Image (cartoon, rainbow over all chains, first blue to last red; front, side):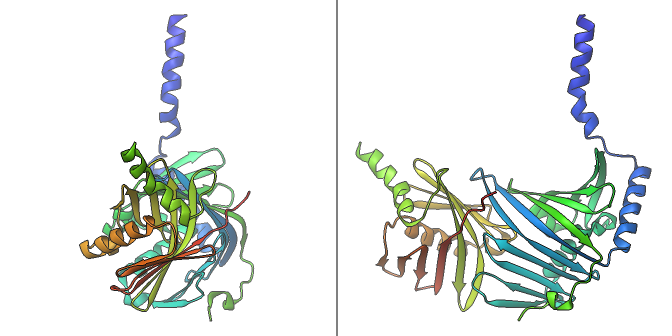
Length: 211
Length: 141
C-alpha cells in the first residue's frame, strides 16, 4: 500500500515535468514546417483581439480590445477600440500612429533600426514567421491538447532587455496563432487573444492608411 | 499620532485628484507634451495605506516606468532605456512628487496643477512639460 502511495506521489510530482517536455528536434522541424506552409498561403488576416496586461507592481490588470488587419506580409493595422482609442498602421516602410489626442505621427521605418526590428517582429509574431528566424529567437516547441506552444527566447540585445520570454499558442487545425503571451523582464506579462479570425478575405488598401 | 497623520496625508491627497475604484485602482490616459511633441500612454495607480504605486505604459503595454509615492517622495523603478537619464528621472520624480502632494488646483513656483472635470493637468513651466491625466472607462465583460 505504501509503495503504491509513494509511486502515485512520484507520478503526480513528475506530471508537470511531463506536460512541459519539449518535442524532439525532428518533430519541431515538422511543426515549424507546417506553420510556414500555412503562413505562405495567408494573403490576408483580420481578427478581433483582447489584451490583458498584468502589472506586477500593482498586482492589477489593464484590459483593452480592438481589431487587427494584416495583408500581403508588409501591411498591418492594429487598432485599440476600448477603453482607449489608439491606432498603429504599418504600411511597407511607413509607420503611422494616432492616439486619443487625434494627432498623427508618421515615421519612416528606414530611419530607425529599432523601429525596423519592432515592426518586423510584430508582423512575424502575428503570423508565426518568427519561428524560423534563428537570429531573433531561440525556439522550443511543445504539444498540448488542441494546440502547439512555441516558446521564444529573445536573442538580440534590445529585445532581451524588454522580454524574457514570448510564447505563441497555435491552433493545431489552422496552424494560426491564437494567443501571444509576453513576459517582460520587469515581471509584467501581456496576453493577447486573437479572436474571430477571418483568413484571405479582401481587405481594402485604405485600411492601411491614415489621414 | 501626529506622525501617523502626516504619513497618511500622502495617500489621501492623490485620492482627491484621481478616481480610484473599489479595488483601489485608478486607470488614466496620459498625454505628455514636451517641446512641441506629444507622447501618449496610460498611467495606472493603486492606492494602499500610505503608498501610491503606479505604472506608466504605452498603449501596447510596453513599460515606460514604475513609481511609488510615499511620505512626499516619488521613486522610479524599471525605467525604460530611452528615459533612463539622470536628468529625466529627476524631473519626473520631482514633477510627480508635486502632483501627488496636491489636493486641488494650485500653482507653486515653476509647477502648477489643474483639475478640470475628469482631467488632471500638471505643468512644469521651466522645462515646458505638460502632463494630462484623463480617466479611462473600465471594460465590463
